[in-house]
Amino acid sequence: MNLPNKLTVLRILLVPFFVVSLLIPFPHHYLVSCLIFIIASITDCLDGKLARKRNLVTDFGKFADPLADKILVISAFVCFIALGITGPVMVIIVLIREFTITSIRLVAASQGKVVAANIWGKVKTVSQIIAICGVLLGHYVLELVNLSVIPLNPEINASFTYYIFAGGEILLWISTVFAVISGVIYVADNKGVIKDW
Image 1 (cartoon, one colour):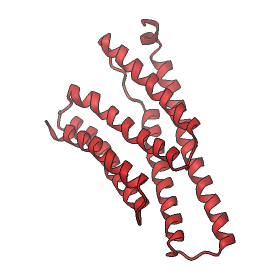
Image 2: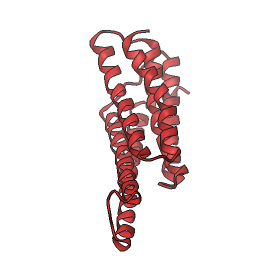
Image 3: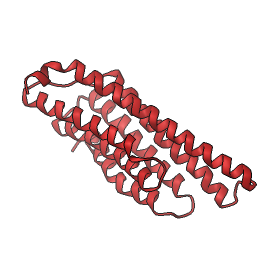
């Protein structure tokens, strides 16, 4: 197994650690989960670049790399639902987008065609990374307030908590809008694949 594929596998292996550190409360768990997510996101950036630069593109990499991305992001979104950070609507929209694009890619592959990534797919990925990291860091700040590391009086604390949740929700919805935009563009760009179903 070459280095880019090892990085992809590492990203998948990091997901359970990310989920456990996020869902099981312990001091500074939001910070730990954010660091794990950042490391996993870095492997996402590196594996593709290394594969192209060193001519190490493989069928396994083509399959596993986008799968690893989806596993990581969807795991974060589902955990946010479990923690009461966001509702299910956004996650359902993202899942519909991912299943749709994956289906188009599978059909295209069966026809010997390649559905190329575009700039909107990259924008979607970057916006999701920013949104998830923003939510995690925001809740880490709330955790520091609850641990009295950051002292706030009760009135300010209530407003502060509201703005942290609202800010996180806005970031997540922005990333969802980009997911929908990129999905619509993928579908429009691959009408021929859909017509051949």
